[in-house]
Length: 122
Length: 319
Image (cartoon, rainbow over all chains, first blue to last red; front, side):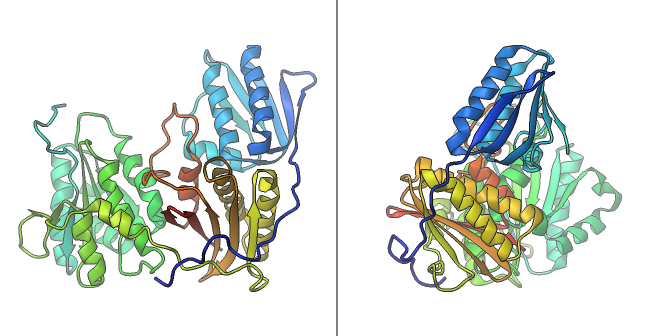
């Protein structure tokens, strides 16, 4: 292998303008659940986890999550979904309506065979 | 299940040295047949051409064997323990020894891949300690270089010499030494500003989302699309978020093209102290800690260097 790494820090790196990511969560009209728009990442994780905890508390048999306006979900965000699905129990389930493609991929890779979650693809 | 008396580890991890197809079959096929005769689950994960040798020799008996082309399933060595070896072993009913032939090192492994391969072989010992599992690792003495053959004696507690020689304990066994030795500084990433192909950007908690977008925009310019671009977004998010939470709060992301791959590297001031991080399969009940596992499952190669001054994780994504 070649020589050692340069000393910390690397010179001449760009510093991006901070852009505050958003996550808006609103109740659905006509059925139990919420619609989420924006991204699920570290800065918005709290909003996402609160919305899912509410879903678990509400006690409906089927809880709809309309996710077609999500632009990104990280592993922790999918983990919170898996955790919520696991806490439902008793035949209850979360229905993910049109989530980003990466969400069912991560569920298959990291939480295979998880009950309590159903994906309606776009 | 019986508990072995004394310090004997039920995990068995021999290196099998072979010089030609005849020696390869003599060392592998009886291993598979013994497992089948004992009704023990058996998997063979070796490069495609060797897979076909074993399949042809087993014929119809191969129906009960799980076959995997290691060039595909194990392209990223960091994926082999969670995605191949434990994925198979953990899915078997308890009470029976599980047998696997795993050949992660072949002559075509690149200089960038090799250190990750050697570390993988060494870490198998810690990952399977105490398990009723046997993993037999063939090494091609005709085509592998001396370093790879010498390392095999350090990563395997038992060696089976080529030809008619008998199995023996390896005097050179030192898996921790191999993990430490290949925890080597990576060749430097190109400095930002050295060309339009190089994106270098510092980040902190407030810019996580912005740098992820910069990385994917840059990846698209370098020719990534579809799944590969989604993978770049996920990998960037996991590595930069880890830096913010565990790595001192800030870091530097670099994305650039090299040898037909897009490379994505994150450096921070944290220290990775668990060599098995990202190599344990996710347990159903565990909530967090899957970020590095996902990175290992998605990337074509992951190289890591961690020392007192900080940690560098470099991922290779095929275009």
